[in-house]
Structures are given as structure tokens and as C-alpha cells.
Length: 232
Image (cartoon, rainbow, N blue to C red):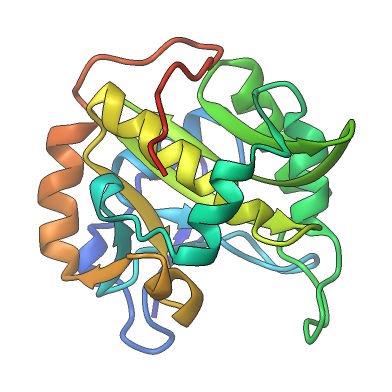
């Protein structure tokens, strides 16, 4: 059984999350800014489909990407040197979210529905949620978005409408996070694609230990502007 969050009830300890499905911890509650920030600070995130109650997760193990461990393939390195793109930050947050929510080959639906877009757009307006955008010839062709607390970044989703566009966004994000002293990017669930980029699984206990240190580091600016030098 999992906890049902009524009337602002606190989240149960993450150690109480189910083994199957891996990480399911609680249901109910709201997507208010307060509830979402409380969840992320405790290593918990929402993931549910339209028509379902809000489901809260904390899987074990946890997929993470240490910024300095990001892998740049030979083909991506060539693309990064080409500079046929422009990198933007926090200039098209909702547009990035909606692009991430668009149907993808082999998927029946999306978990990024209107309630999620509304909630995370509010977090963006508060300076907590951020986007990285890749532009080519004035068109948004790739990007990602996530949550930043202290020196911890929680990656939510990314999209690509041009070759390597989402990887370009991630390359610039990891370079900037290194400059700012961030220690970890939460990737939530394991996928071969993330593993190919340098992400790896760690035990939830280790994730929580690192998380509790990183969220108390000084905050970055409310509106992001990248100033790193990406050496490709």
C-alpha cells in the first residue's frame, strides 16, 4: 500500500517506496509550487497520466549524470564545433515543455499534460524551473527543462527536432553547471540513451546523501544566462 496525501499531509520517507513498480511512494495531493518544491528537496518527483491521481516517485537505484562525466561523442563534438546553432536559456520555457510533450514515435501518450505545464510554468516564473533552447535559423529545434535547487539540477525532459539538438542542449547545460559548481543532475529513470551520454545508476541512499548537501548550496540567478566556454 502507498500513502494517500490528503490536506497537505507530509510525504512518507522515501525508503517506504514500492519495489514494484519501482519507486512509487504516494498518491494524491496537488501540484502547487510548495508541494513540488517540497517533493524535489526530498528526492521525490511527480509522474502520472491524464485522468490518474497524482503519483509521486523515488526509485531505487536512481539514474544521475555528474556534469563532468557527460560524454561527447565524435559526431557530437563535430556538431558543437560547427556552431550552426544558437543556445538560449529561459526564453521559451513553455514552448520547450510543449515540444517535450508532443507525441513521439512508439509512445501512446505523454505525462506532460496541461496540469504539469501550468505547474512548472509557475515554477519557471519563480526562477526555479529553467529551460535550455537550441535555435537554428530562428526555429526552436531542441531543448530541455528542469528544476534547480541549490547546486542540484533535476532534469525533467528534452526534445530534438534536428540531429543532436537535445544533446547540444545537454552539453551546454553540463558545461555551465560545472562552472557554477553543481554536483549532480537527476535523470530519474534509467534509459540506454542516458547511459550513452554518461549517466549512471546509484543507490537511492547515496543519491539522498548527495542531494541533502547540494540543495543547501547558494542559488544561481533567477533567470539563467550561460557564460561558460564549451571546449569541444
